[in-house]
Length: 337
Image (cartoon, rainbow, N blue to C red; front, top):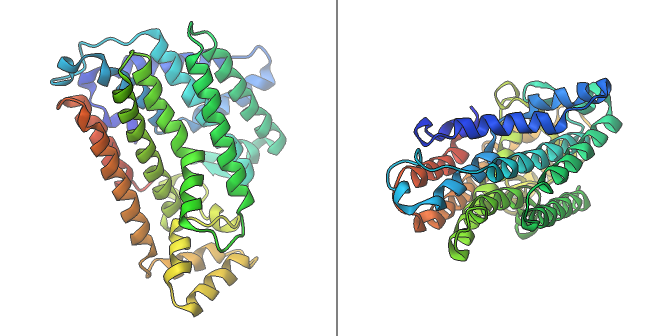
């Protein structure tokens, strides 16, 4: 289920999300058939629509305190919010295309990845094209504040990916480094989505920072759950290649916890599995971790972050928009895909 579906129809997000879809397609449209064919594959990656939804919701959240007490139906957002929502989705999809190359993934949204269909070179270049179009579209706005913020965020995302790549196959990775990585590679763009939505409505600094904090905690919880699902999820449900963290030697929170708390012989077994080349090692890791407390621990940390995200938006007046943001945060830890 797209996470945008959590937002009740009564607040009127559907026309804005439809406008995002139209602008996304229009911006990427190419007169070159081979480019247009590649761009067509991108539409299968459009899943939860979390980031554009947050841009729009945070814009609605700060537009009118009185309106928030009932519904956001009477609040109108301008073209700037549609542009910003489209830009963050383009950046996000670009990271997915590049991630699939890095992970050697073959399935995304229950379909073949770009790298599996057309090779790594085409996938890398398509990701670059998405980033290029994101900045081209963002530059159409009168203010360059959004472009600078998007640029700063993409720098952080790239640093996160580089850091994760640096620590591959480092079985001594600690939790602090892991949390820094997931903030950079995932949560920073979600945080920026919330910040942009509020900033474009001229919200106060305090309110912008509260919504950004909501996005930061939500994004980190989202990534922890993704990392848990990479180990214990069902591929037909999750809809993408699983076990890629194990295959690429990327320690995630459940594995870090297990290596720090399991019996010595079990820790040695996990390391030996991670270092092995056997094709079914991901299943063996799954069987080793599920009976332990490490999966539960990771889910608890994700839930704690969700609780912090919800606390951050208590500055908003009680009403439907705050309730939707709360429901979205709670959905993060309850999902199975």
